Each structure stands twice: as structure tokens, then as C-alpha cells.
Length: 111
Image 1: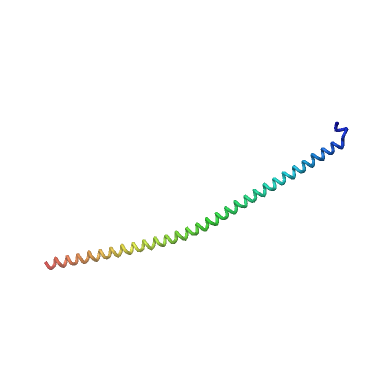
Image 2: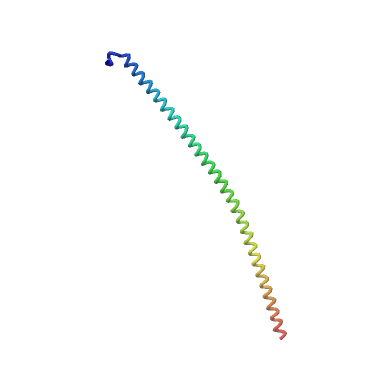
């Protein structure tokens, strides 16, 4: 059989090839659509994770800032208390020293 002897067969084959090609195109479109949906879902998940990480980081930074502020207040209080204790001890020492000098002076005068 040559193509000229059976024109209906040729048309049938052409129609079958075209139908197969259309089905193949449709199958490719389905795969592309599904892949695109998966990609978009994955992208949306990554964006959500990044958003959560960013919000958690901001909250964590805020918590650290509050803690740092509290730590600085505590440190200031400790240093102020140390300074006061040092000044008090210095004053006591100076008073004791002055009293001893005075006693020593008095004792020398008595002699």
C-alpha cells in the first residue's frame, strides 16, 4: 500500500498523530502545572519560614534589649553600692586615723 492508494488511511494516521500530539501537549501542561504548584507551595513555605524567623529574631532582639537594660541597671546599682561602701570605709579609716593622731598628740602633750 502506498499513500496514494489509501488516502483515508493516511488521514486516519495523521488524525491519530495529531490526537496523540494533543494528548502529549496536555500531559506536559498537567506536569508543568503540577510542578508550578509544588514550586509555589515550596516558595510560600519558605517565605512563611523566613517571616517567622524574622519575627522571632525581632522578638528575641527585643527581649535581649530589655535584659541588657536590666543588666545595666543592676550593674549600675552594684557599682553605686560599691562606691558608697568604699567611701564609707574611707571615711571611717580617715576618722580612725584622725582620732589616733589626736590621741597620740594628746599623749605627747601629757608627757
